[in-house]
Image (cartoon, rainbow, N blue to C red; front, side, top):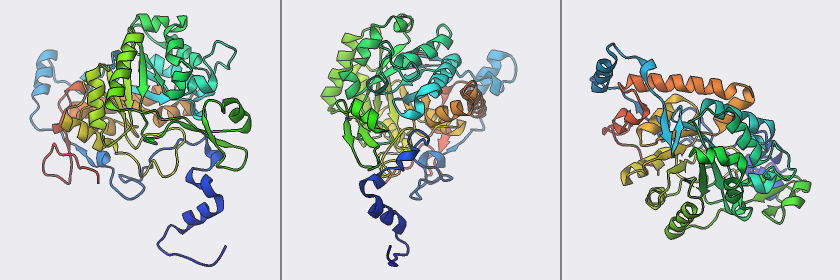
Length: 427
């Protein structure tokens, strides 16, 4: 290494790229399956120093509270936070909280015992859960001798075994490689899924993208043996030079008409399943959400640029895609879909309440759900949800309201703008 230096320039990052080549576009491969990747959080700022517009918003209770008066009359006493009713409908499913477990696919972090533990706790809590993409092409479905802990059927059974009647539901995601494996056909015709299907608690989610890497498909790191087994299904790239390879799924190609036809095809082929659509935080997210809703989607999920759990190039989480707050601003301006679900670094009640006030029906837990389950595979997610529920009740009642659906844009304020309904635009 020379003694040449460049003060004020990201010198070490340049040197790392000079040493490692293409591998330096990603986190160290040894961290795959152990580290959950997504946009960083430094106080209320993104890595580049920009303020996170959602965290910068403040929740602003009014002085006069007519809904509190109405609740007082209904109860015959002064209401408090314990009178907030958090149950809601999420994409056709009854949920105990305005919360769902975000799509966790084939990444190693969500596989094995941890994925099953998370599924069991989500079912016991009555929270809808999304089974993410690429589980079947990578881990199998679970009926042909594949390891049950990594197969889709294992997660489905673990969830359903704990689920109370009338609560929750499972959304099974499908991307390009999943379509080749006929994942939805397998689930729709499986006797194990029949109780969910007959009770209206099964959905299929069409994935158009994800917040951690908008415009790209799913990515994982494979050892040489796994790469040889999956090489005919995915794109493989030997960028690491140590025997491990980058596995990339294709993102799929969509226009407004293709999306309409896909939703119509889902309704025609799987008439008893709900239809969900997942969007990445693209600049035309409001238009895409409108098209999906008008075509008949029961729920539209928007994953903000802060989202992420598995594996993504370093350039993406901090620099690609719209932050969740800007997605919500654009959706609100255009008129959000009837059931808008959002995700993106949701881990506490304040960020969740702001999202609900800005038009979301429910918020998704990704990294938070995995970390909670990893902390205690028996009850970590359960206790996390108890804390989140308390925060939600405290915040919603402080606004003089008693249900998540009563929240609106007047309940949040952007310090930079005199108009309380304004949300700062990004860029």
